[in-house]
Length: 130
Length: 76
Image (cartoon, rainbow over all chains, first blue to last red; front, top):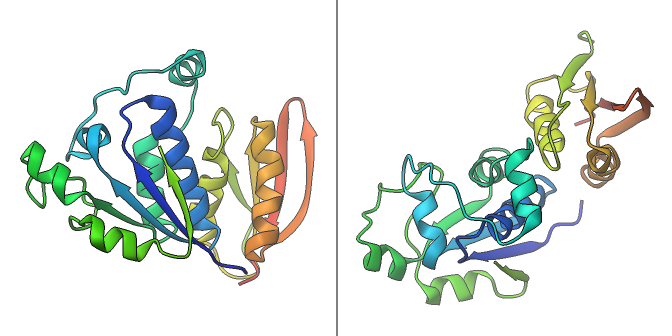
C-alpha cells in the first residue's frame, strides 16, 4: 500500500472548514498515510478539553450538515488518531496567546509544536490548509 | 470463521460508514466477514475503494430499498 505524508493546517473556526479538515485527516490516516495535523488560530478553542461549542456555518451546506447525521468534526479528528495513528499537535504560539496549558486540550491532542518543527515535519509531503 | 458481523451505519454520512467499518474490522479476526449497511451512496462507493487501497477483500455490494449492503472480508 502506497504511503504518503499528509500535513493539515487547521486555522478556521467555521464548520465547513473544520469538517473537511477532519475528513481528510481521518480518511487519510486510515488509508495508510502518515497524517500530521497542526491546529492554530481560531480553530484552537474547539479542542480545549470538554469544549462542545457549535462551529458557525459559512453557508447552506454547513447548515444542512448541522441538521443531518454528519459525523462531528471532533470525532473525525479523534478517529484519525485512534484508528489511523495520525498525530495532532497544537501550535505553541496559539497556546501561549490563549493561555492554554499542556493538558488543557483533548487527550488525543499531542504536545505543543512550533513552526520550525512543523515545517520540518511536513517537508516532502502534501500540505492542506483550512 | 465467526458469524458475519453487521455494521449498521444507516443514517450516517461520509465518512461515517467507512470509519464505523474500520473500527469494526479491528475487532474481528483475519478471515472474518463483515456487512456494512449504509444509506449514504457516496460511502457505498468509497468503501470498496478503501478496501482496494488497504488490501482487504470486497465480497460485493448491492442496494435494497435505499440501503447499500457492502460485504467485506478481513484479509490481514
